[in-house]
Every structure is written in C-alpha cells, then in structure tokens.
Amino acid sequence: MENGIDDLTPRPALDGDAEFDVCIIGGGLTGLWTAHYLLETDPKARIAIVEKEIAGFGASGRNGGWASALFPRSAAALERQHGRGAAHAMRRAMIDTVDEVGRASRSLGIDIDYAKGGTVAYVRSAAQEKAARHDIAETRKAGVDTLDWLGPEAVRATDARGATFDPNCARIHPAKLVRGLAASLERRGVTIFEQTTAIDFGARTVTTDRGVIACETVVVALEGYTSTLKRTHRSLMPLYSLMIATEPLSDEAWDEIGLAHGQTFNDFRHLLIYGQRTADNRFAFGGRGARYHWGSTIKPEYDRVQSVFDHLHKTLVELFPVAASAAVTHTWGGPLGVPRDWHATAGYNPKTGVAFAGGYVGDGLSTTNLAGRTLSDLITGQRTELTRLPWVGHVSPRWEPEPLRFLGSNAGLLGANIADIEEKVTKRSSIAARILGPLTGH
Ligand SMILES: Cc1cc2nc3c(=O)[nH]c(=O)nc-3n(C[C@H](O)[C@H](O)[C@H](O)COP(=O)(O)OP(=O)(O)OC[C@H]3O[C@@H](n4cnc5c(N)ncnc54)[C@H](O)[C@@H]3O)c2cc1C
Image 1 (cartoon, protein in one colour):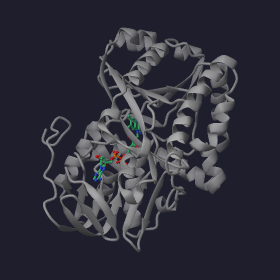
Image 2 (tube, protein in one colour; image 1 turned 135 degrees about the vertical axis):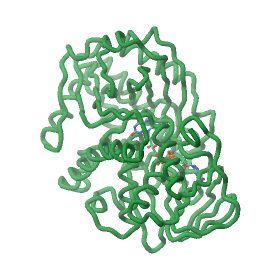
Image 3 (tube, protein in one colour; image 1 turned 180 degrees about the vertical axis):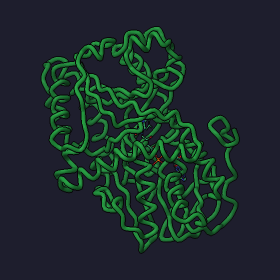
C-alpha cells in the first residue's frame, strides 16, 4: 500500500520558501486530526504539515493502542480547578471521543482494528482494592458513566482478587491509524513535507531547515518533542514509555486468560503498566520506568532499555503465567509529553495565529482527536461545546531549569517504584504515593 503502514518511504521534503493557509508542525495524530477536521469545515483550505521524520514516527505510531476516555489530570483535580460542571463536560467529551475515533476512521475507510472492549484493571492487593473501591464510589457519585467491580471468577488467570471494568476504551492498531490518516489527508490535498525540521515558529511563519513557510495559522503539534525547540523548551517534559509484544497466543490460552478481543488491561500499581490483546492475538504490553534524560534530550537509543524490557516481561508473566511460553518478538519505546501540572491543553491565539495542543502524558491516543476537533473550531472562529471545555486555553507552568527538572522527574519515578514496594510490604495505601499525588495530576 503506497505510504501505508508497510511503505515507510519518506514523502518529499519542503524545497524552499512556500505559502499556505495553515502550517502544522508535527505529523502525529494531533497534527493529522487537526488537518482532517479543518478540511471538513473548509475543504479548500491550503494545509501543509512539516514532519522531521515521517508521519507517525512519534508516539502516535508506537503507542499501546488504548483509545480511552482517560484524561491525564484526574477527575477530582479537574473538579477542584474548574468546577463540577466543567469536569463532567470534559469526561463526557472524552467518552464521545472514543466513539469518534472509530467513526471517523471508518468513514475514511481506514481499518485500525478498532474494537471497543473496555478496560479491565486488575486489583492485586488490599491497598489496590481500596483504591479501586474509591474509584468506583467516585464514578458513581459523579454519575456521568459507570465503573463496575468484577469478582475473582472474572480474573481467574491471574493472582488478582478482582478488577474494575471501564467500558469506555477501544483497542486499536495505532500505526494503521496514523499512517492511514496521513495517506487519506494527502489524497484530499494536504501537503505533507517529510524529513523537514521546524527550527522555530512565530506569528504567521514557520522556519524549517528547508525553507520558510508563511501562513495565516501555525499549529504546534510536537508533544514529546516540544522541548527540542528553543522557544518551547520548558513547556513539556519528554518522558519515555517502553513496550514489548509477544508472539501470538492460541485461542485456548486467551480463553484461560479471560481477555476478549478488544479488551485492554492494567492494574492499580503506581508505576503505570498497560496492555492489550492485539487483533492477531499477541500481548502488546508497556509501562513507565525508563528514566528522564538530562536537558530533556531525546535520542533513538533511549527508545530501547533492555532492563525495562526485561522488567516488563517479568511483570507480564507475573500477571498472566500462561504468557511465559510466548516469546517476546518486538520491543520499542518513545517519548510522550508531560506538562508541569499534568493538565493537557488545546489553545489558539487569534492575534498571532498560533495554535497548540498537547500535554496528554500517556493518554493522547483519543485526546489527539478531541484536540483536532477543538483546534479546528477555534481556528475557524466557531464557539461550540468543544471550545468551552475546561482544557481550552489552559496554561501550564513551565518546568524548572536543570538540574531541578532532572532531579525532580527521576525522584518521581523512584517514588512511584517505592510506593508499589511500600504497598506490598505494609499492605496499606502508600504514603509515598499520597505525597507524589499533587505532582502527578491527582
Ligand atoms: C510507548 C508509548 C505508549 C503509549 N500508549 C498510549 C496508549 O495506549 N493510549 C494513549 O492514549 N496514549 C498512549 N501514548 C501517548 C500517545 O501516543 C501520544 O499522546 C500521542 O500519540 C501524541 O500525539 P502527537 O501527534 O501530539 O505527538 P507525536 O505522535 O509524538 O507527533 C509529533 C511529531 O513531531 C515530529 N517532530 C519532532 N520534532 C519536529 C520538528 N522540529 N519539526 C517537525 N516535526 C517534528 C515527530 O517526528 C513526530 O512525528 C503512548 C505513548 C508512547 C510513547
């Protein structure tokens, strides 16, 4: 398939100065969905995307495939900051977005292995059960959606004592989505300049290593790579998430595991893990734990840390002993973007024509779609339900300069590890986690 998931040949780079209505920096899902919804409003808009590598090279092409309704800042924190109505509106918008990702890709004829099977979150200790019961009670109180308790019979292949079930998550194949969307946009007239690096941007201009683009609107969609531009160096911190995939397991093994097609899973530990049963019956499983690198640097070698891969495999087998017989066939990773207050943002300044969306932490797969629709409404001057959501126009504080950023972020990772060990040993909710809470969007 030309420029599809299998053909990674770069598209032509920008060749000298050019002029467009809209110039989007970054060919991930934030940039691509924004182009898609702008075209829906104005099919004649002249849109360029500048991408340093190839479309989908970043987190959008390498993630865990949870198209969830999760937002990085917790519901309680959103309510404290913006009020109950706004927090509920945000949750509703995220729930709708899970469906919109499926609807929009179907309407474009892109098969992304979409299956809305929900998320099973295993509960593996008394402290985790306390956290789970708290989440169920909070969800009931809010009354926007449901979070159910699954008893031990539903989690038989694990050492779990139960699980929660959130129906608002679809399993997808991220590379199929991002590569398919890029190809579809190109067919509809969007120009994607690959191997073209933005060096700076300003009001109505984007400067790249291949020429300058003059435009009415600039969309900054760099997420984990935001720190690589001098102007936005301290806006988002790149944090690495790493993943493994196993060879396919038999249907009998999956029956024993008890995860249906389309189901995603994690547990209630503090150092996040996430997994899915892929359409071809593999485990795709990931987690945090790779350290932050001095000066927010991003290098290809940071995508692969053998000790983290080994730890992920060990964790997967601990969760599902039957996975021990399945060889690990793929390992990878990549940077995601973390704002100082863990509060994602979508915003547009009509005076400068500069729009930005990002700071999704690890919850960007659906949120990029909401960002695309929201930025499109903001840029085209429409006031809609989306432009009234509480993340619109939110400004996060900047990260501290080094060495504070290095010390703080790596201490945070260590703290999450300590919190899990503390809960294992004391069998009570972690005090370390309570201290870390305000630093991680809770
Ligand atoms: C391993 C991993 C697993 C994840 N799992 C999930 C998950 O299961 N569910 C979920 O919701 N989220 C997940 N996420 C997060 C999610 O993938 C991201 O939030 C989302 O894809 C961000 O999309 P984006 O378009 O904003 O950024 P990206 O996809 O990172 O796109 C940014 C693009 O900008 C390009 N670029 C960089 N510098 C420049 C420059 N100077 N000029 C031009 N282009 C440039 C990059 O090459 C890249 O293609 C995961 C992330 C990772 C890394």
